Image (cartoon, rainbow, N blue to C red; front, top):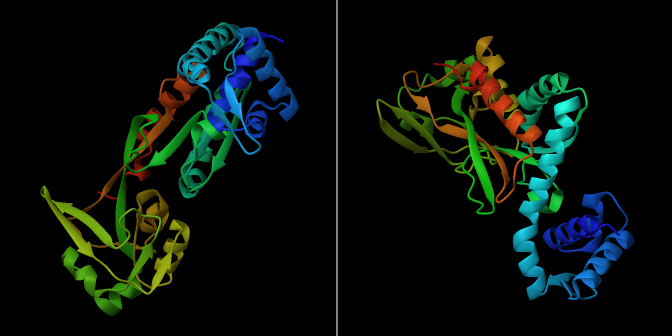
Length: 302
């Protein structure tokens, strides 16, 4: 057994909590993963895991090894990648996690353009509105919308997206155009339950913040579904600017509260704390940040 294989198997098992999950992450069999870890323990002369029928737990020796080797593995991989990519460009796979709507309306196109620049690179995009466990799922990079409070990850802000309040023209014809955020409390609203404060809509004007509690018969955990309900005139929709951008540009929806700015939401690149980022991941983050700065539809109407 190559010691490096044993260390990789150990780290994957420690991070995922089982030989089965580690085998899935490494792309090898459960039996081979266990064999690699056992051979590493034999070489070191100490047990790294306490094994039970349901899970594995680290011994003190395992905890000490886990505190040191992941960063060394990352640095080793980065050296090999740099040497390889210096000759043939970016290679291998980047596993990416992102929210569903953001992935569909923007990220897929952006990643396609990045991939066109690096023909030997594979991109594995996994879309889910739940935050992925980067270590357990083997995710190299996650794009997240909103504040990230997870302590085990590092965050790099890429841009700010605006939340926009808009309505169909016929709804405004029936109820009138709201002039102040408080007027929204009197109007039917579409509630997107994916938003952190789904019943409190936030605006600002001349440095002053306005928080208004809204109500609505229609609740949905999907920005595209909220948009569709807004287009059908069921209520005011409060959503990220890129979701509504084309409808606003073509007049199917009309921005409400002229002079007020919707709540700004950060878009960030997130990766594991303590990792030495591979060059290909660093380049993707740089590319995404530059691309988002030029994507004016992300910011919404002025």
